[in-house]
Length: 258
Image 1 (cartoon, rainbow, N blue to C red):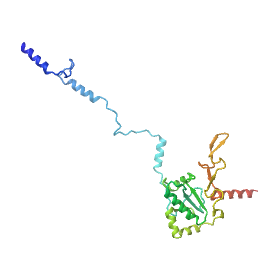
Image 2 (image 1 turned 45 degrees about the vertical axis):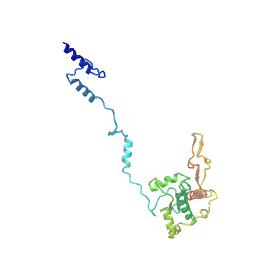
Image 3 (image 1 turned 30 degrees about the vertical axis):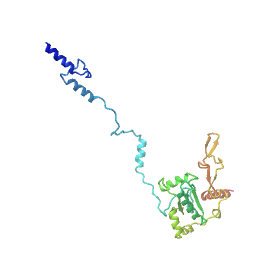
Image 4 (image 1 turned 180 degrees about the vertical axis):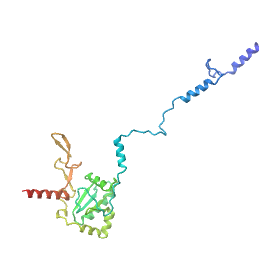
């Protein structure tokens, strides 16, 4: 009996005080409880992760039809040198120049200035379209070339695409530019001198809205002016060939009616 008591004392000393105290109902004679715990961990929900998954978002039939139709649209053909181009609201009997008067990019500004000076030496009828004065000209270039990245300047003579600063200088050196311009019909004297109305800016302030691009209508209140651009400017009727020709035609019709 004494030996049993000593063995019990030794067992108590061997158990460290930091050892966890298991509940009395836990039985170590079987691993059934451990297996149940493992099964419960496997069946527990896993955290949601988007990695490696594809989310299919529903698409409306209208958007799906637009995407499917757009994939079959032919690409916009880029005009080549000396190819015929349909320029919006342009007189194809003369010269059309797309340029910019902004000095933000000095290289572009100098090239536009150089081409403009070369064309002015011929004293011809020229439709100058400054992209800094009207954003509509930028949209026209994007429509013609089928891209948003269009380098300036761009020159069109007689309804044909001639090129930029490199092509104009090369044609000028070979004396071919004079031959191209010489084939055009002669211009009036009004196009040979600096315009007294716009002083060479090719734009004047809109007299309908006084340059504010806003007009007041009794029925709708204040609304955008439909005569000018967003900057409150209109093309100079003395410099712009199409506007001038339309005015002459309309005045001729009035005289015939009288």
